[in-house]
Structures are given as C-alpha cells and as structure tokens.
Image (cartoon, rainbow, N blue to C red; front, side):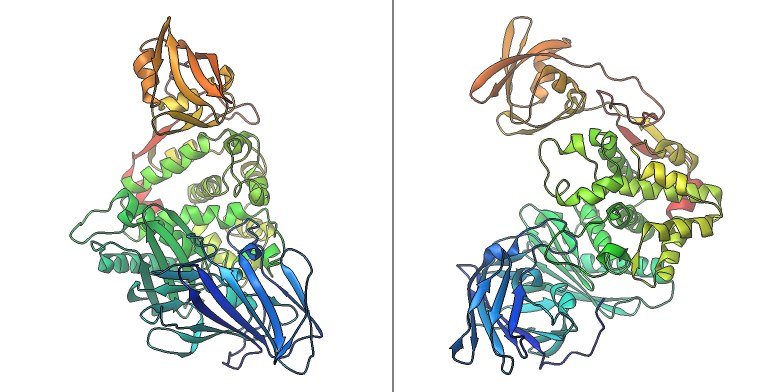
Length: 604
C-alpha cells in the first residue's frame, strides 16, 4: 500500500463534490491538480474493489471540461475511461464534470431529493502519477441540501456540524475506499474495545429500534476485535456503518474503516419486539460479515491485490478464502456474541450446506476456479450458472468449516488460531495460499496439502457430514420440495416461469428450458391449467408420469415428464461422487444438536 502521510487541506489533488441537481440526479465535480504533468492522464476506475465485475463507471460521466485559469485545455479521450490533458506544468489544472447517480446499490452512486450516496470510484477521476499524493475532498452544501448531514470514514479537516466541508486522504486508494452518505439519516454511536463506532441509517420506518441495533452491533464488533487481537489494539481508529433501508434489498460492500449496507426496512429491529425475526438475523449476519472483512480482505488480502489496478480485472484464486472464510465466521461470531443460539446457528449452517448440495456446478468447477472466474460467472449469473459454477461464498464457508472441525478433532489447534497466525505472519497484509498451507502445517503438526487439494482444487465432495457428526451434530435428511425433485428454479406470478433447469434433473430430461412458461399439464387425458408450481402436485395426484404443456417462442410444446420418487433417507448429505454427474434429486438436510457439550466446545 502507499506510504501514509499526514493529510492537509492544501492537497496536491483536490475534489469538490456538489449535489447540483437532485431531480436530475447529477453530482458536479471540480478536480484541481496543483502540479499537473505536460501530458496529464486521468481516468475513472472500471470496477470497485470488493465487487468483482467491470461496471464501466465512466458511462455516467458527462460534460468533462479542462481549464488553466481562463484558458481552455484540450482533452483527448484515449479509451473508454481515460483522458489526456495537454497543459502547462506551472499552474493548476482544473477539470469540471457531471456524474449521473441513479444506482441504489452499495457499489456506485445515488442522488435524489431525499438522499445522496457515492463511492469515490464513481466520482473521482484518478490523476495518473499522483496516486500516492495527499488527496482532499470538499463536500459542498447547497440550498437544496442545507438540511442534510454527511457521514464518511475519511479524515475531517475543516467541516461544519452537519459534516459538510473538507476531508483528507493520504492517497487515492484511501480516498476511493471511503464512501459518503448524505441526507436526513438516523445516527447513533457506541464504543467497542475502546474504538469509536458510528451507525447511520437512511430510510428507516418509525418503528425502527435504533438502540437495539446499536447494542447488537456493539456485541458483534467486540467479538470480532477480540477474535483477532484478544486485548490488543485493532488496526482502526474509528469505524462507520452506513445502512440504506429500502422496500426490498440486501447487500453490503466492505471498506477500510467503514461499510455500506442495504436491507429491507422490514428487517430492521422494531421498538417493543424482543425476538429476532429471520430478516433481522440475516441483517446481523451481514453486519458481521462486512465487519470481519476489516481484517480479512481489506488488510489480510490476496497478494494479487497488493496494489489495485482500477483499469481492468484483478484476478485471484483466493476468494474462497477471503469471502468463504468470512462467510463461515459471520454467523459463528453471532453465536459467540450471544445474538443467536445453537439451534439458530445450525439452521443457518444447514441452509448454506443445502445451497451447495443443490448446485450441480460443484461437480463442474472447483472453488478456486470459481474465485478466478468471478468476473465473468458469479457476477454475471444467468440460467446456466448453477450448472456451471459454485459459489465461493457458500462452498468456501464449508471448506472453512471442514478445516476447523478437522483441526479441532485432531486437538492441536483451531482455525481461529490459524487466522490469527496468518495475521501475524503476513503483518496484516498481502498473503498467498502458500502462507495458509504453511501456518496449517506449523500449528497442526502436519501438512494439510491433501485436504486443500481435494476441497479447494478438485470437485470432490466435502466431508461435512462426517465432521459434523464427530462434533455432536445430528444430520437428518429432509423431503425435498417439488422444485428440487424436478430440478427447477422458477418464479411465480400468475404463471410458472422457468428460470433455471438443473442439469440431470427430471425437467432437464423432459426437455424443459430456461425461459419456458409452464402453462399446464395433461394427466391421463385430462388437461389442467397451473398458476403455481404447487398446482402440479395437486393435479397430478398419485401419477408420476404426465405431459407438461409449456410455451416457448410463441409455440406450445408437450413434454413427457417423469416425476422422480423421493430418494430414500440417508445418513449423509452426499456421497463421495467425485466427478460423476449429480443425482437427479439433490439431497436436503437439517441439523440438530445431538451432543450439546461437544457443540459448545466448538461454537463458544
């Protein structure tokens, strides 16, 4: 990473951002380069770290203009996101431009009459050759936004009570890694292990219980800090949570000392309600996940991410570790913080396990390959995605589970110890898979190369059932839902629209395809119209063979379909099938406690 220096407000690179037109959703940006090069190159990133997809942020940039004093400076566009200014080097170069902000996600920028939000990767042109210089960001107040407040993880230098004013960053990487929230948001504060934390929430309903959210988040943060450092000091001086509550949404993006989150407003805790809804538990898991990233990916990170290249994809095979292991610990730390009980944790673990078991793509692609292909597969999902790839989040979390339970069974160390040893080994910085293998061998007293080769670099099944059973967890086969028996994923809105046909399933064998509309079925000469998938079982009755009537490209097709019998119960979630094709009916399990003492030694 670039060398950190004390910022000043008189920065060599300065940005002024103004919410210029709320209804047109336009930010205006003024960029001042104090000492430009004769052929000064500038560019806007094509992606944002943590979200592995080229998003072409320059598509939202318009009206780019350059001047030195009153003199217009010629700009040459070099490609889709780079420009070159031919200018003098003895006076400041000033560029002005607009950015249209209409994306409600945590990855880009948003502006309307009630709220503004942006990541620096969407608004701040990179000044080539001066990336390591001190950068300043002036967030300007206007008549339309005078009643708003500002929240950001950047260092304040000269700001008013509402947060408008000048902030500083030691370099460009820091500038674009601190998103900005603007509006009339709710705000609360707490301290975790001596570190000040702030939580801001936009869009909450009047029933929102802010005190409970703060108390629960404080427990998560304290648990995470103690996980990594015991009684030592964390690598942050402060932290900011920014949550946008919407009608329907979910997601988060980690940053060095903050995170941007989005959730359904019905998932927020409500005043007067003591219990935790499934939605609120999911939100707490998201908070835990993004906070854990403060260590695992923002600092302890792939060697390929030592310095981000904002102009193109940055490839690594290690997302199974950085996202998958974080996914393992997010719910586990909720349990250790006392926010969920054993039964709830096992329910969440069963859900992740079933997601992997019901993905035929796990037999096609390794989790290391899935990490490398995130740019073209995970972030560009289509109807074939479940058949072609596996999630490095969910399978990666199961790899972490298997490592942890194996280490615990052998009795010399735990995955907790390995994570902390990696932090020390890599000085909280870039790491490779070789570092993980080395620490496993050192702490466990033997090589784990065989396990990692099988679990990460092959498509062999993971020994989840065996290891959970050894730690006091009972696995119970569950009857699959009709969609699983058919090998389908559908949407239902007055008709059955087929989204995905899973490879090797009954629907695949019948000739169904993504995009088909399943209209009805013919059972022994009687035709029936269906509006929901459950209508199939209702009209088919005991029949296991019938004709499905589907619409495709304006044509009606009659497809003979054989409904598979429910597979007999087994004691394991999956056999060792290696590279063979998946069974037509994916297994489904539930997890319950069989030995509370054994589970307690693991979960607590």
